[in-house]
Image (cartoon, rainbow, N blue to C red; front, side, top):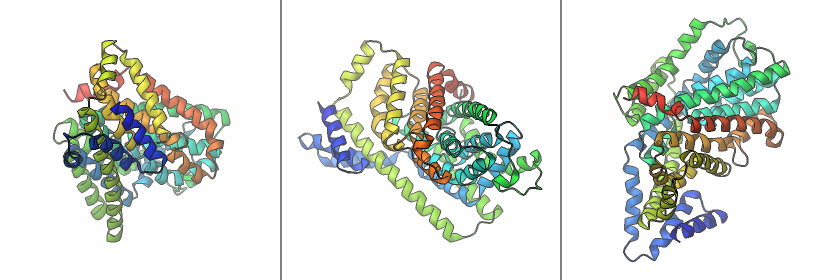
Length: 433
């Protein structure tokens, strides 16, 4: 009864235009008004205590790190590195788009930032090279999803905090799925390029001088900064030298030193602006976290999920079927909800069931993040698709055929991971033992 009332109040608030965070708080607080043993002071304490998580400190730090990286104009280096790697492979410009997204994801962890930064360079270049506007926009939006899986990932940090799962294990586990998505997209890009006879990359298309040699040595030199940052974070965590949060703080210091002393970016107004934006972005996530903590506490107090958990466990519900249902739930939620909001509401609800069914929490975390991130390329929420369509001067309806193809490819990747969870677990098992 409590669970049903909370759900109805939450959606009623959304329908009348109440922001998601406040809709969650209202839905959680109303049942407490009729509970004589609980005061609203306790509710506020729960929300405040949710900020005390050391793990969650990584969120503003990684957001700030990504913002500082943009000051270094690292995008240009990533494009050059990607071109050097894919060479003259059929569909090389499409492959370069995907590979650059993999590198960019390892730096920013943001799908929207990927499209905003890379799309304005690569989409016009792809169109000029002979790709359709719809394909160019869709592959840019679709490949941007890798940024939420390749570490460092804000969504993985949020999931780790909510599910009380090792963020370090999630980071390492995200590497193989991220590569898997990239490879499946590259296979389709190759088939598309072969069918439409799309040419090789030309330097002028991506802003490189025509006389600039495609030197592997130069590419290696340009990769030192972004690659070293990735290694500092991942190797440090794997070696047990520092936690994910400590890695985030080290990454911020490292990027600042490179930006200020090596890249010589010394415009303090720009530093103030990226700091301000990082604070605002972090604050919006923290408000949602506080609201989700209250909701989780209320449902736990009333034991609202116990009947569902007991039903699934007692009937020995198949873990694979549950993960497939979880995937469908988050894919649907992602079509109309912001990923952090959806996770903050539903992860606390699903964790007891995941534990009861004996599902590896790291596998569940990767499936959750992959599924919810798919929402950025599926209308109506599809923020990455909307942004890419504007850059390509097309619309989502014309892109729908390509969107459905890439969504299908992405779903196949998730299903492969559900059926073969070793893809997710083998790296953490090897590197964290």
